[in-house]
Image: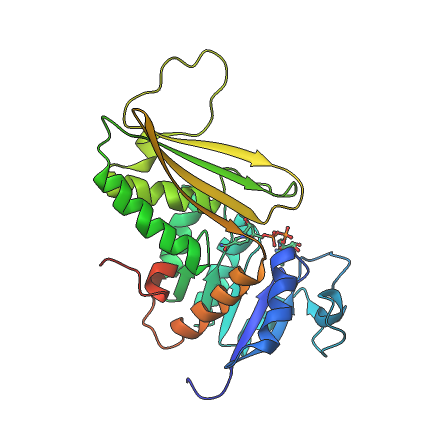
Length: 274
Ligand code: NAD
């Protein structure tokens, strides 16, 4: 099963991350581009995926048929949209191939469906596929554990390009989860996702989120621990999408020989605490 280069399908092939993946795959050992899938009705269907990504022709046309694309593949890399990712999780599970999910903005219902698909499939899902942010998450968890909630408030600040459609970002939520884990609390019950008007004083023990959008920013995140007269800020800045693509491809290679299950980038990077 693990012989030869891992045959990968890139879905959302004409998107920002899809194009980055198509440029990245030929430069990485152990993987090959098996197929490229676009949205049905998209003007890119039938076009050469390499040409769309700025590589020149590579002989792989963008198709709108995920079922045939998945059939003889080893894995699919998916940076698309929540409903699409849920549908692809079912197809990837049926085809028994690895599914790497970078899509953000999934609802609890979407997450439950992805978890169900992971009973039969090897899925790696993360709001951020890079080493830097995953390491930052570990540091945020430690800091949140060390800095008592009565004295230290936690705020997560993020900025992304003007085209981003979900907020807070998947990475901001990943960092918020890490802080909540360090505090031993449930993020859902303690997060403040927006503030407007007469909000009253800051409730103790909450984790606040602030979202900025503009220009071409790939992804900036800061977690601010604010205490009496001092502040600790842990931050990360992504300058290039290729770091997410490289991480996703590494995740596919890592998952190739794993048992079915839902894994995170912490597992792939060996940063998992369990
Ligand atoms: P994008 O809009 O440029 O690309 C998404 C692509 O998916 C589009 O080309 C769209 O046509 C395609 N698509 C939608 N439905 C489809 C379908 N049914 N079949 C095939 N293709 C379909 O967006 P982007 O900037 O590339 O980001 C995509 C997702 O990845 C977002 O959720 C974003 O937040 C996330 N993202 C995650 C990470 C990470 O490290 N986890 C990094 C960057 C972006």
